[in-house]
Length: 198
Length: 198
View 1 (cartoon, rainbow over the protein chains, first blue to last red):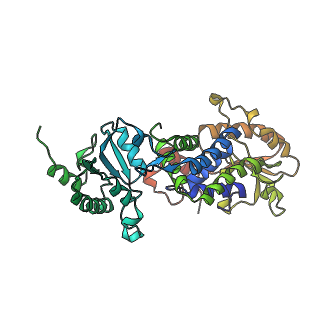
View 2 (cartoon, helix red, strand yellow):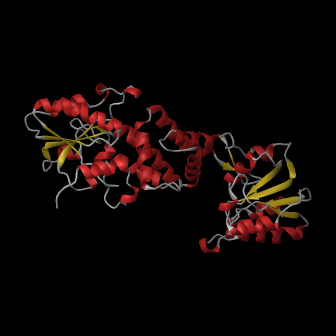
View 3 (spheres, each protein chain N blue to C red):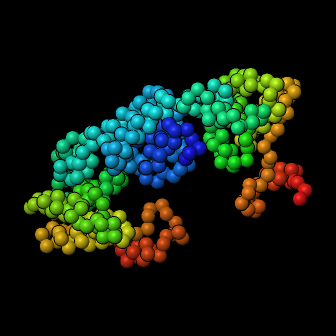
């Protein structure tokens, strides 16, 4: 990046530390900051400070929140008898957008991945087990549908079932709006296996 | 973006103000900041401040610089008799990477675009004309090869030629390493027109 003057090269470096940002998009964004108004740049800096200082983990579900408990755990309308276990806060947002679920969540903060040194004790598993008092009827495991997500799901189900709590898994199948032609064979096999009667 | 807690939603908004950033990549980057170390986040904030406070325009060529004159205009080894006119600082970086040019540059700060209200007086044209004293032998126009770049090139050549300075344009042709099959017909026509003897 030595083609750029120091202040620009330095900002490009900061952008490159973000996930999924290559050198070209980092440069494009750094020039974007250069062309921003002073007020927008100041707001950008304040927003970075804000996420580092004001974002905490919910003391119940480990999701991100800006207080002690997140909005979902604080909401008496939500069904505390159901816990949907997800990998990260983005999965909570995605599931909330479906408007299909009125229970609570539990954010693991990752998946079991021995290759990357992530063992169950590095995840928010004991916080999940601590929540399984008599009131919880069902735990829905919604880790991502890949090998590590599956491994984590199997691990959790083995841990939770003996406690007398029903453990379920999100359905596999063809995504709505997708073209069957482009669905991979594993997904199609799971979709056939999980077929339902009209 | 109301799915996210305020500090995160606010940072996503800041990322979305950058060119070429949609809501998904803004969210991915905001979560990236959340997972950054405190030191990296502080460095990111300092880098934003740095580009807003320390980056100026070179008093000669209008390129970005962190002093009064840019490194190229300050370099006695560069040939001041040649000026390559480009739209923006990124074009200077791209041309420098070719290691083919030893003259100086002039950054217009855009192209003529009446639709967007960009008339020649909004560009660094008078600064360019002011440089055309007796020492300048040639002005190479290297605006982008599109309609607005062409319009600007024609405008500048009409302005500069009467001053007795040679005006040239970057060659059009097929990009090195590209496959002819995928070159558009306009590019191929220009490549044929500009063919050279071995």
